[in-house]
Length: 173
Image 1 (cartoon, one colour):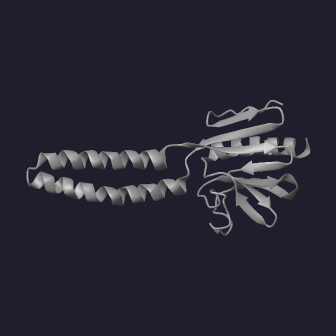
Image 2 (spheres, rainbow, N blue to C red):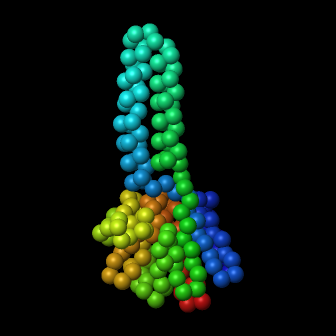
Image 3 (cartoon, one colour):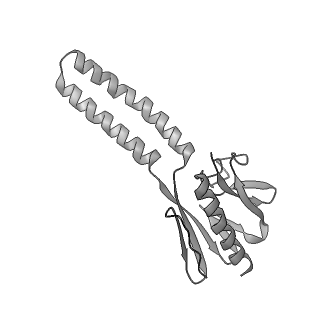
């Protein structure tokens, strides 16, 4: 079975009895949270840096400038760098994150651009339950569960095309 993507940020790996679709994307919700935290954490070193400039203490300026640069680098590294998200297809179930969904209980799939179902972090290990932007969802029981992070519009359409093809192949194949 040959499944190819026209986009470099979607990689499909088909093995004997398993297929994996990998999306290279950035979770917008996490990105904004990390940006806000990084902004507030950088205010302390920037304040001390400004004080070091006002009383010519260039050692303090150097140390606080370096600390501010580290905070900015960590903000980019943790929140803004694209990551890979995998969806695995095998005979019998769909695996997203740490959860497995039997094909028999998946009613439909589609694209949505709004949040998701109610979230209870104690009982739901699926890390992508709430998302911002276009994403693929599955109708699992009576719930619409987002199974991808927010994607760009063209990436979401291509990912849905490949996802639907792989789902039908492994559901009935």
